[in-house]
Length: 332
Image (cartoon, rainbow, N blue to C red; front, side):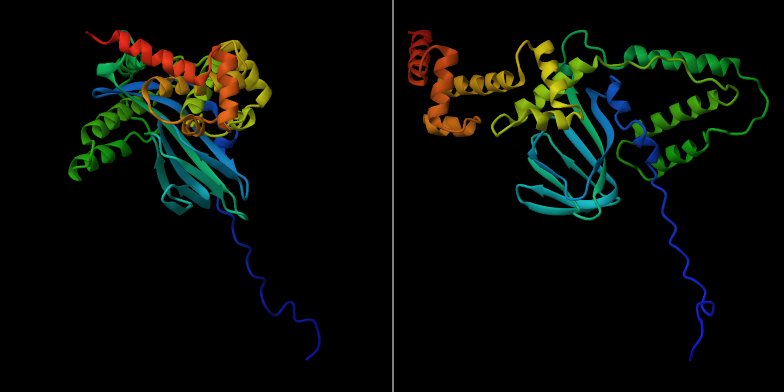
């Protein structure tokens, strides 16, 4: 059979590309990191350290590391591997996992598809142990409540379209109660607040003018970098690695350390390691070889060199001095 048969069969429809639900966050993926968000819930304070979208290119490896805070990972698109000390786990779109505090983990994105991730780092503080006078969202929350109530008092008593979908939060509150959900009191409280806030916006075109509490970004980045060093000082750390965790250049991070700590990045890391070595020498019975390996020094000889240069005494002299001081301090 000859001739052109291309018109006999309809062309297969092209697959419709699914819209990425979090596309808007790509415009400024770290915008929420700039806000100094902290609030009280019961006897605890919740401080948002990081809340952002990030994308891992195909085959990207984020080497083994840990954090002192809780880190929530949500996968809105793509897939990859989560490596923990007990093995590897596949992660893919729609999944979630929590690492921290102090959970050593590595992330590897799929070699062909890559992976997107929504990250939330939360530091949880027992407020019984919080410093006196530490504020947890009080003034910001008070201002929003005041503005909301003022708007409600000025609202006209005429019907209007529920433009901001306040009514959906009634269902949220009801389900929290009927399903006896964990945290139902807090869920219902948040739902009621959403109803009030969304209703108060019905007759107004302007947004609530509460200024959001912004961070000093250099101090904030230094704090995050310093905590990451404290959590991971025992392994090899580079300026570029830590800078990449903060989405800034190594040169920028170096300037931050010089400005905030008065020392370079490498000096700061070395100081952290030496502080731990001194504690080991005072309190522990491990050998110098063991101490060097535990605290990020490539060899005992290098530890000897650095310690003598920085402390003015040898490791063994420091240990003997610490033992003598401890004996003198004991009650007779």
